[in-house]
Image (cartoon, rainbow, N blue to C red; front, side):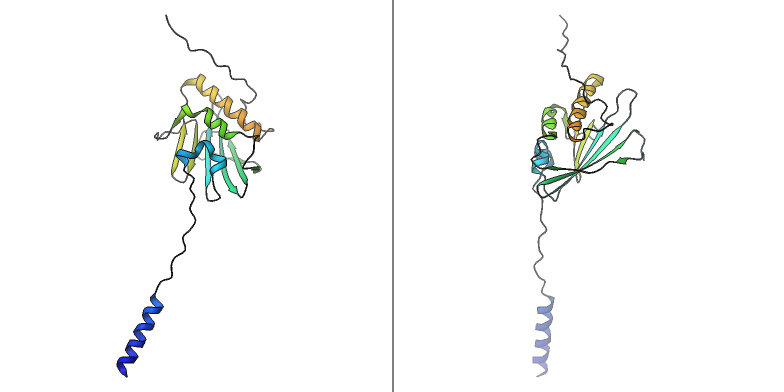
Length: 185
């Protein structure tokens, strides 16, 4: 009888120690390095994309940060801006912007595609624009003052589509004129 009681206690212990299958948390299939030119279409509700842009040129200093999240068929974009390059500078948040995933006004994906030649995925330096997802990042680099100006004009014109009343995109409205390469003969 004593042995039967011990077996019964042991079997109850084993049954109570049996672990339930853990439920798997959903995972995003968005890959920043391969999907970034379709960022607004391919990101999921599990992704938070952060974009940092250095708007400084000559005597002007400015940084813009965008935090992009998705909920259903909508994107929420939270802009922040500062007119300082100092670490710890205070950023001003503006009203969050909600747009459709299929929005045709902002055209940020088109901006990214136009600037593919500037992408550097290996640089540890900050580029003119940086996109991050968790620990992954992509830098958009510029080379020289003229190239930087062309990039900033394109960026500011793109952002004015999203925030038409913005006073922070000072290069917007400027037309980009591509100059032919100078050659020496």
